[in-house]
Image (tube, rainbow, N blue to C red; front, side, top):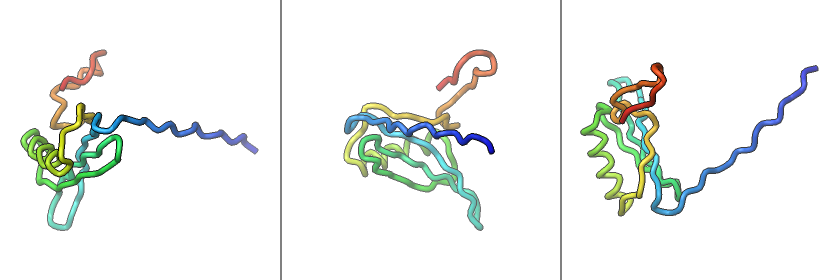
Length: 101
């Protein structure tokens, strides 16, 4: 019988209200084509804004963020992007560097 491992406890990362929003695209395949959902989640309340777009590029990102900020009634102090193609211009990690936005 193998010993069972005890999972690490989940530590929730808390941010003050108005401090941060997390931003990412999600890819969806429909019968009529592919669409990208732009997701913007407020860190404090976890309020989610979502809209579907035909592409995930910088103009789409800017348009979506403006719409999300209007819906939220304000702009958070910082945005957290998760290696989005629309934001990352170069990936130097294989050369010992970092992601370049």
